Amino acid sequence: MRYTLALCSSLILLSAIVYAESKNPADYPLRIHIFNRSEVNFMHNRSVEESKGDGRANLFENGEAHAVDFTFDCDQKLRASFGYETYMAKWKKPGKELVLLVPVFGKSNAFFTCDLKADVKDFAYASRDGKMNSEPVDALKKWMVNHNYDPEHGKDTPTRDPGAAAASTTRQ
Image 1 (cartoon, rainbow, N blue to C red):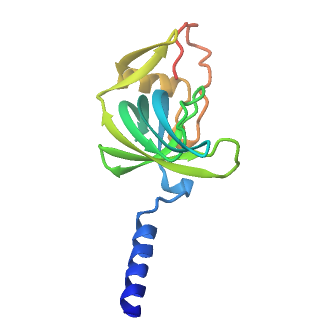
Image 2 (image 1 turned 90 degrees about the vertical axis):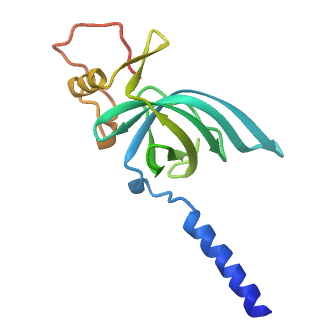
Image 3 (image 1 turned 120 degrees about the horizontal axis):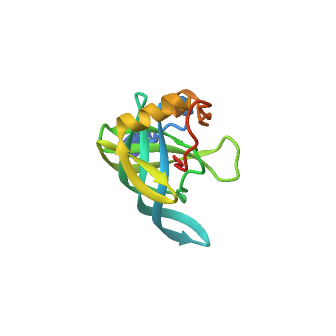
């Protein structure tokens, strides 16, 4: 009886370890920029215990950005990206489900993971004058190259192209 109980306990612990997501940033090669999201938070003793919702983002993979409509289920609140900020991500089920590595608000070097069910589009999202638009992937790629912006490779802030005409377009 003790052997069976010990074996069951070991299997439960092993399965929890296997299914626990890594919190090592090196394991998350993709980047995602969340434009907006709506969420419902479930509280326990005045603390968020679970957050569920949906939103829109651009997923940066292999040097290109593709629009993603998503639903999420997190242990903590998921915030929209600030400016050009992106979150680290990896595929859990390629083309269908992502895992985000999200910094814990107000704590350095602390992260939580969040699962996103993703619907990847064949275009990219853009924000102009506070309104969401779509644009061809190639157009956003050209802008990224012209502004030295590549969040997958640490180029997190676009630079101004001195040869480009001033435009009122804001990309986020």
